[in-house]
Image (spheres, rainbow, N blue to C red):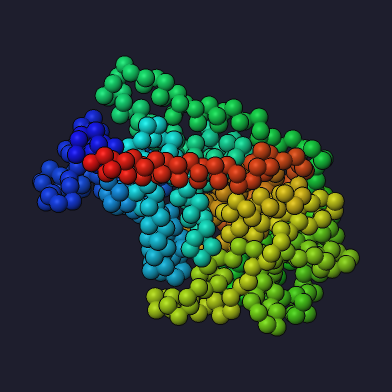
Length: 540
C-alpha cells in the first residue's frame, strides 16, 4: 500500500511534532518497544490529568477557564491515535473527571454505587475519545471533534435508564465568557464552544510548532478566538429587565432534622419546619421587617406526608398558607392506592386549598426508582430503602400564582434541556427549581446543581427560584447572577423582588435543533473517516 493510501486509511503514525508523542505509534502485530510503553503510560497519565483539570473547572470552584486547557491536553493525547487507543484515553480522562465530580453519589450508600456510576459514565467518554481520535485525521478536525463531544453528551443525557446529563461542559461555565451562548442555542452550543476552544487551542500549538509562519493566526481566530468572540457577541441576548412588571417572591428553606438517607424517617418534622418558617415570615411581614410576598415556593419533599390522605399534614400546610395569605407551591409525595408514587408540587391557595398539581417528569434512576432491582440488590442493600418506585408525570407544570406564571422544574429535571425548555414554552415567566439535597449532606452536589440553575436562567432569560430543604436555596436573576442565597442546613427564608419576562430567547425558540445539527456534523465527520478508509482499501 502506498504511503498516501495509508494516510487516507487513517493508519499513519503520530506526527513527531505532536508534543505528547515520544515516538511512532505501535502496530497491533508488533510487541511494544520500551519507548512505546513509556509513551503509552505518559498518555495515560496525561489523560487522567486532563480529566482532573476538567473536574476542577466545575463549581464550587470559579475556574471555568480550566476547561479549554483540559480539553487541549486531552486532544494532545488523542490526536492521530487509533480507535482502540482513543477509547482507552477517553475512558481514563472520564474517570479522572467523573470519579471526583460524582463522589457525592456515595455520600450515604458507600463507594460501590458511586464508582459504578462514574465508571459507566466514563465509558461514554471513552467512546467519545474513540470518535475524536478518528476525526482528528480530518481537515478542520477541531470542528468535528467538538461536534463529537456534544454528541457524546447527548447520548449520556438519554441513556441508560433515561440518561444522566451531569458533567456537561456547559454546566461548568456559569461564570465564564462563553455562558451567553446558552441563550443562543442552549447547552449544546455552549458545550460546543468550550470544546472547540480546547481542541482548537491544541491544534494552534501543534501547527505553530511545525509551521510557525503558516496560517497559525487564522487558525487561532477560527478555532480559539471564534468561540470567545461568539460568547461576547451573544451578551445582548442576556437581560434581566422586567417585561411584564415585577413581583415579590419568597423561597422557604425549613431545614431537616438530620443529614443523610434517614432524614425521611422524620417526615413530619420536615413538614413542621417549613410550616413554622412560613409562619415566621408572616410575622416578619406583619412587623414590617420583611416585604409581603406575592407567592411562596417550598422545596421538593417539604411534605413527604400526602396531605390528601393525612389530615394532620393537610392542616399543617393549610394553616401556614393561611398565615402568609398568598399562594404557596408545596413539594409533596402522593400515595395512590395502586401504581407508582408521585413526586408532586401542589399549588395551595389560602382560600381554596390545593388547586393544581405538577408531577415530576424526570424520575431519578436508583434514587426514586430502581431499575433491575434484584441485580442492584447484590451490590447494595440500600436499594430496598426505595420500597415503591415513583412514576413520571407527562405535562409541564405552570402555576398561576397571583397573576404570575411560575414554571415547576423539580430538582433532577434541571439537568435536562427538554424539561426546562418545555416549561418555558408552556408560558412560564419565572422558573422554580424546588429541590431536596439533604441526602447528599454538605457535598459539592448542591453547588453543581446551583450552577445548572444559573445556566438555565441565562438560557431562557428567566428568574430561577431555588428552594431546597437543607440548602443551598437561592434567587437567580435572568442573567445568571445569584442575588440571594442561604447557608446549608439552616432554616431561612429569602424574599426578593424579581422581574417577570415573557419573551423567548433563540435557544427557547429553536429548541433541540442546534443539538441535532451538531449530531449531524459529528456523523458527517465519522462518515468521512469511514469513506476514506473504504476508498483506501479499494485502492490497495
